[in-house]
Length: 332
Image (cartoon, rainbow, N blue to C red; front, side, top):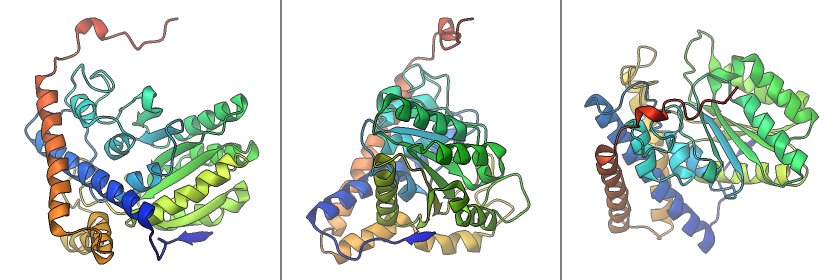
């Protein structure tokens, strides 16, 4: 197992990439803040799992993919959808349950899909989508393509049998799948230490004949570099990779969860906020002399404007027509 760290030096292309990644992380942060506000106002119903604090994982990993690669995720997928290029208007409309949403208002927060972006959806069953990622990898291999499939899941999924079965099959068939475990430290529904559990899986990934890396998920550059290596392995022979990306969510598990939850203290969360991935990248760019306060404010205002437009779009959009209720049901 190797541990991913960000490169020490940066050239012009890297700086431009990091500025783009900063813009995406700011968009996700402002989008999620507005989603929390809209949920509190009753404009968003059902479940809503926010991504605040984990922005570097989605942005860094997806920056290493091509447009024809595949992405599949769990229910905390707003950030991945935005980083993949699904318009903020379509994502917000979906959260609002509107017909203009990326899933036509019938998926909501946990089921964002856009086949045109090869974003194969958020999935509400913990670990249930991981075998689907293996299936996407098998389809790529069967067709002789050189695409990859990037699969996001939380650390709670490592306790699901399908996780181990999917990794085993991906190794046996040499499927081009990158399994990205977003270890935010608080997998729900268990009493044992998830950090130790995931680390144990990563350290034994060699039994699946796959590469494994431990990545600092609060450093977008480290995530990007680790994913690049995994992509190269996948394209050059279909070899899968397991990335354990250690991150931290600053919000509760979902909007139904108290801000800090009953399982951690306010002091712990505030201490973790010192590792904010956005602040980390801002500081790095300022030290390089390629970002100042005025430029940062302009990027932030741009993100806020995109989010405000998304809310206006969602509010003005129509509800799904009742006739659409069964349009996504498979025929017998």
